[in-house]
Length: 289
View 1: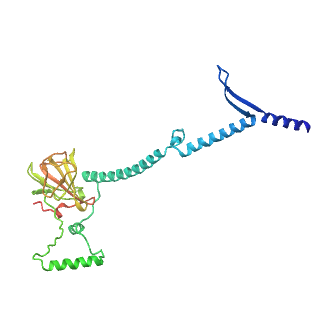
View 2 (view 1 turned 135 degrees about the horizontal axis):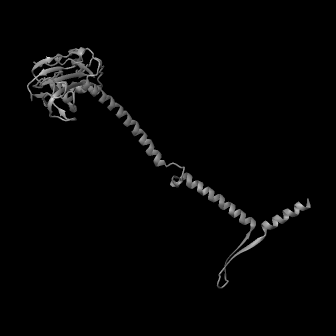
View 3 (view 1 turned 90 degrees about the horizontal axis):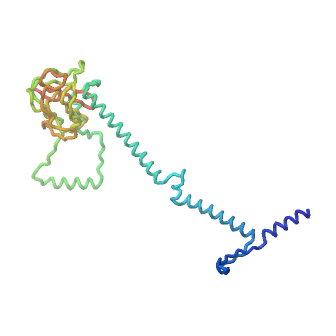
């Protein structure tokens, strides 16, 4: 027991024994700086310095951009860019999927690989007109006042207000003799109209050129997209006057008739009309002769 007490006293004496740290001028041995230290003071100072160093390092890593330079830590900016790129990738995938379906429908139009459905003229014409019977229009107070004021102004107008109704009319692309009619049983989803070579081919309605090019079987082909889901197809032309993406008007020349392609038997126009992805008989809407 006495030995343990002596050891403790000896350890305490060592820890509390004072030492003097002196800094001297080497040439003159002049004392520049002196500091009294004990082993306990040195231990406390070193421990506190280590703790402060560790704490400061943690703060720098956690709350400053310096952590981005440490391997294993991800950058906030990189996370933001990755999230934005992920959203853009999803959007692009949706657009690509839509374009693939769209191009697949065009391929079916070009190859005729499609099932048929019965259409009548009235059903397509009605689709081009706005059916307002299904809407319930309850005018607001401001709308009622405006209607009353307009009625008073029109009461003394010299000209009667003109009203128009949109009619669904297709312009004949050419006039001539029909050599082969629309026959879904033979997968002939078109009418073949015999015309003289180099006859101008005209657009049946306002639309946009979605395909203008060459195919080995049908020669020079041009496709127009119209409103209400209509597509018109013109095949076996000798030349095309419009390019993909061009806007055309009804009756505007889009091609020159010819005898191109492997599946032709003479100068004629192979004309197809499609509604919402299904072929329809063009004679129902257009008088070719």
